[in-house]
Image (cartoon, one colour):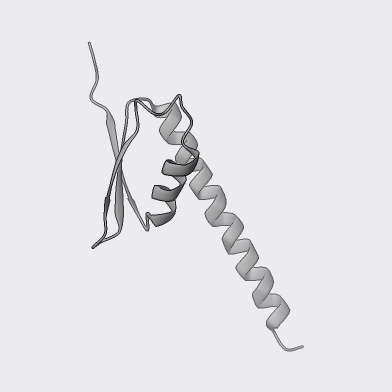
Length: 81
């Protein structure tokens, strides 16, 4: 019995669209489809396997956390003593 592919809606997706087009592993190629809507800037990911999607989501979360750490460090450097 074939299950329906999981769907993910990602907001602020310009980075995701670029990531998927430039660095998409060949193993994900048949199971990943995305559409880019210029107006609301969303990417809709359709994935058949949870492994592929969880790796992409974890990578996105890691990048977000690293960005937040960099912003905090810059704020600390810019604070007057």
